[in-house]
Image (tube, rainbow, N blue to C red; front, side, top):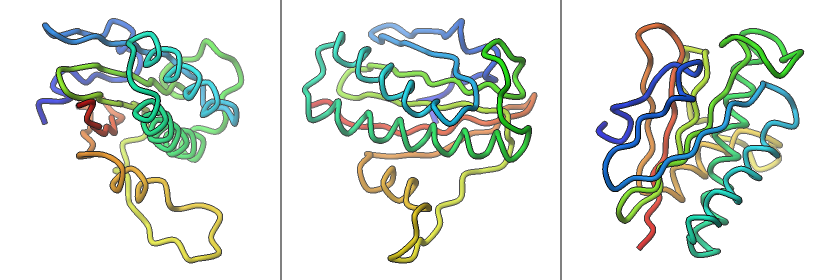
Length: 160
């Protein structure tokens, strides 16, 4: 899990540690219905600034959206919806994008300690395919829990 060796609890991620040869950008998000939209916008802007090819940006934006959607659902189930943007960790989700040689790492942290669980969605289901997409479109994905609570779910996509 070298990918997220520097993973932290959401409240601490604004001071993200960047390793040599890496660029990183984070955004703190409240657990709101509009959060996946803002996560996608952030990913598009950052990856565009890093001059990532458009097809890779499209994949990364989709994966970021799926991970953030799951984090919103987990956070709302645990704490209820966010009521104001400047909240403590209870309603905070952090999306971190890392550009490393040959790959992009997408990390999404929240305060729910429960592990992500892929489900088998039926053909008519309106939800439940997010982690299936993450698994299918990324090189790897996993998660880690934080000693002080919460978790980070991440996925890796190639840039070469």
